[in-house]
Image (cartoon, rainbow, N blue to C red):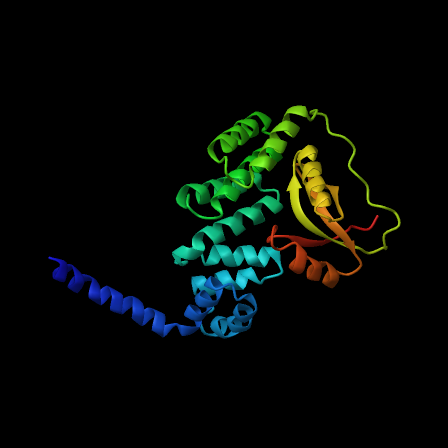
Length: 270
């Protein structure tokens, strides 16, 4: 019986091997990614894109180095079907982070939940569970957020996010519901300045809490009110910078590791 099983799977293995051999550029990207060789990955990417522009894995790696958030999001979505299994949790995390930065908290929460449920053993699962609670806070669903944080703390006691979850729970219990004035940008900044947006919240208390965490880590961060047609968001900005290139370069070196879906924005002129 064992020999028959081997005979059944042998053609499948040959087929998979043939596919890998037929797409050596794509396979090389996977190998570089698995070994953390980011510079080599970026250098090898153009050849793979030129030959396989619509391959799901190629789209994923292209999105990794895309500096335009909207373009990166479109590439993640376009390559969703057919993406290699080992990239799925990473892709879900990046999609959720982008949605969160855009203020699409309900969608982000669902994406985080999908990641945690489908890939519970992923090294990203704890982050996804914690960020799901953050989205509830950002939506103003304080009671649901508290329940989420309590469950997270109880079920993930060894997680590196537990201390943050405890602080979030304490802040949610202590913060008054009435919003306070937003911190203003200093008048001493240049006439044209750029910032790195790393988050957007419906509740100002959550934005301020994120700012405190960033400031404790050494970043110059502030809260900025952003009005849309039907809502007000409180964006978290790092900066200022006197040029878009300087902001993008700083983000790539210092921000991408914890907020990969950051967006470089220009402060509107008064």
